[in-house]
Image 1 (cartoon, one colour):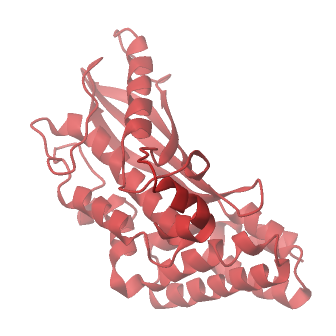
Image 2 (image 1 turned 90 degrees about the vertical axis):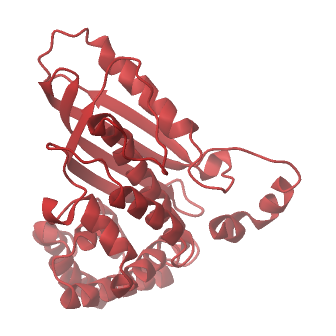
Length: 308
């Protein structure tokens, strides 16, 4: 794993002496069901939450060894909106993930996204399983819950790898693609197909594996590894690199307007970017405001106000 060779080369050599099985994710899964009107004992949701935490944290998602301090911190909030049928629930899923900034206690956001399309079936104590070679089960609603969580697990891991080494996340984006291609199918299940909208799992994965969009992976690497990770060592150089990443992203956006990956990348970064460029010179601030007002339109006024 290139990330570990970059940051922990000597420690990695030591680990070769004995096999380790440390998992990749440090995940917290919360199941919220306050709005569900049901006669079922509500402890079913506590049971589901426990099972999902075990599933996400105990599964090995890669063939690499992660030390405890390398685990990817992430959270998943399953916000159940209603029971559409007995044991079948309609929910949204909030996905957040972060990675540490080198030589700092700060955690930089990798993912901050709400997926509104989650239909699943759950009977208390039913096995929570996922087999990437047999994603389509006999009951699509049962299979959909773990398929969605596995999809985001691989996407998070791919983004984390990309942030440490150029384009090194591709194997995990391909695993997510396999889930998209073999996703459960059902009358209510959505988010997996090209015709399910413009902001869904299909389009996010398409944007991450489409070779036409390769510059996005360079942006991710430059922003995190050549930018945030160097803020302590050389703040001016780091800020210049971050600005360069935004310039590249702006050029990409002009050639490929309205892509999902642009919105996905920018979410959760507003305050971070303001904090970075507040310390820049007038020209740097002006350029940042010009670009960010286009890349992050909902927060354009905030950039203009804070980076005067």
